[in-house]
Structures are given as structure tokens and as C-alpha cells.
Length: 236
Image 1: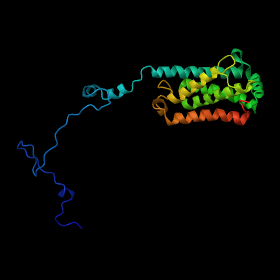
Image 2 (image 1 turned 90 degrees about the horizontal axis):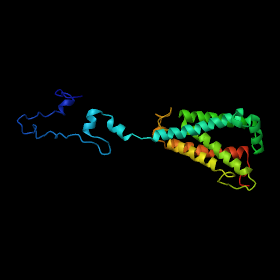
Image 3 (image 1 turned 135 degrees about the vertical axis):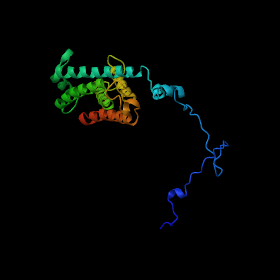
Image 4 (image 1 turned 45 degrees about the vertical axis):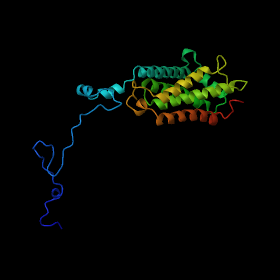
């Protein structure tokens, strides 16, 4: 129980009175802390003058990326349009394509199982991934799906050659697919940029762990599709 003379917590936290004599000292030997003028933080652009005009200006100045987002938009849209066009060509025979029947026979001749299902899955998957890339929506996953498809195309192309070896340069090589693989990997690792529906997401501003996971999924998915649906050694 508190004593009869207890006056509360302020009894032990008395604030000393300030001495107005101009000596700068308080009663009991205390002196106030000197006033420090705020300084610009190192690493930030601008200083007190910039903060006086616009408090967010230092942060916006650090966040300027020049034409980087425009370049990512062109890269992402170009790959997406290519995927959509290729999927439509496979499913509907547009632009000289073989259509569903021709693609089904080609898949079966390459040694794949369930060719009828794979025909629609490949065409529809390309269209879906391409549209997502153009919109900038779920970009790492869309690019990972495209990467798996391109890897599978390289494996099928190598397996179809009698030599059973990887050739790079056209017309008999695979440099076209290699370029598409590089583009898909770059989009996964760099991110979609701000000109898309993913513009405010973490993988658009600072891609890191999610992009690495998407890259692993794309590579593993392409190899797994070949192993479980074809099962042959592409190198003979």
C-alpha cells in the first residue's frame, strides 16, 4: 500500500525549473541540450531547400529510371505478341500454320504422349502467357511458362536431328530458340517495369527471391515436360 504522503509517479519524476537568468543552466545543475540544425542525409538527393519545396522530391529523384521502364515494356510486349501469334497459328492455322490436326501429328511424331491434350495446352498456354506479358500481369510466372515452352522446343529440335547434337546457328541450329530463352530469362530476372499491371508489385520494383523461384520453375518445368511426356534422351 502506498504511504499517506505518496503523490503519484510524478513524485519521483519532478521536472527541474528552468533558470531564466540567462546563464543557460537549470536549477539543480541541469542545462538544456543545444539545438542542432537538421542536415541532409547522405545518400539522398537534395537537402533542406528541396524539402522545403516538396518533401517527396528527394525520394522521387532517387527513383528515376530514365528509359529503363520503356525498354522493359518493349521487350515484354514483343515477346508476348510473338507468343500470342504463335499460339493462334497453331490452334487456328492462321498465317500459314498447320492448325490443330497438323500440330497434333507433329507432337506425336516427336515422341510425346497425349498429343491431343498437349496440342491445346501448348497453343492455349502460349496465348495466355503472351497476353499476361503484354498486360504486365503476373509477369514472372508468364515468362516462366514461356521459358518452359522454349526449352521444350530446343529439346524436341535436338532430338529430331539425326546427329543427336546441339547445333546453334541457323538454318539447322537453334539460335532463334536460344534468343527467346535469353529474352524470357531477362524478363524474369529484371521484372516487368512500371508500365504494366504489375507496376506496384515487388517484382516490378525490386525483383529478387520471387524472380529466382520463377526462373527455377521455368527451367524445371521445361525439363520435366520432356522427361515425363517424351522420356527420350535428346542427345541420343
